[in-house]
Image (cartoon, rainbow, N blue to C red; front, side, top):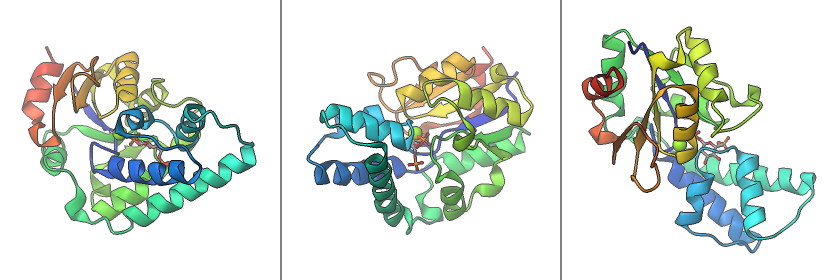
Amino acid sequence: MIKALVFDLDGVITDSAEYHYQAWKQLGESIGIPFDRAFNEQLKGISRMDSLNKILEYGNKHMSQEEKELLATKKNETYLALIERMTENDVLPGILPLLKQAREKGLKIALASASKNGPFILERLGISDYFDTIVNPEHLTKGKPDPEIYCKAAEQLHVQAYECIGLEDAQSGIEGLNAAGMFSVGIGKEDILYSANYLVDTTEKLDLNSLLIHANK
Ligand code: B16
Ligand code: MG
């Protein structure tokens, strides 16, 4: 019996995944490590510092912790400048109806995003009130694909993980949801989100009744 929805943020609720890509790409180029969208897939869902470490590894560059902190801050400044103009119109299609339907059905709702900018973005989008709880990524010991963030979401909602449907756009997130024992819904392409329990290509196709039918099977 499903009792809750657990949302990823970037790439699920809003297209901030595109802004993360632009900000990282700009930073990568500034340090002589250009990369493309295919490489960027590996950065989705993982923390700011883990993303930077992956980029440095890809470019075979070594930096001190202090230099890395500076670069991570620089990337976040670029990112913040890009998301500053976000409004309610930037909620992806299908998400608001899903949040409303979930509320009507009495389901609980959590945010399980690796982003430290999560609460700020929900405010900008005008949808904070739909969320019963937000997992604080600063309190986690491991990032996605570890299930910790989803287990924490279930705990904060006072439900069991198997009573939750999780929505994700990154394979790291799908792996974490599966490991937590949640029903995993992938939003994107099958070749990338290959282990999702259920897949839609865009958020527009999300329909609560279909999700519940598949998850309760
Ligand atoms: P920040 P999600 C993740 O959010 C993004 O997918 C990932 O690209 C980003 O590096 C991470 O948040 C950290 O974000 O730099 O804003 O703290 O997909 O888990 O909602
Ligand atoms: Mg995401």
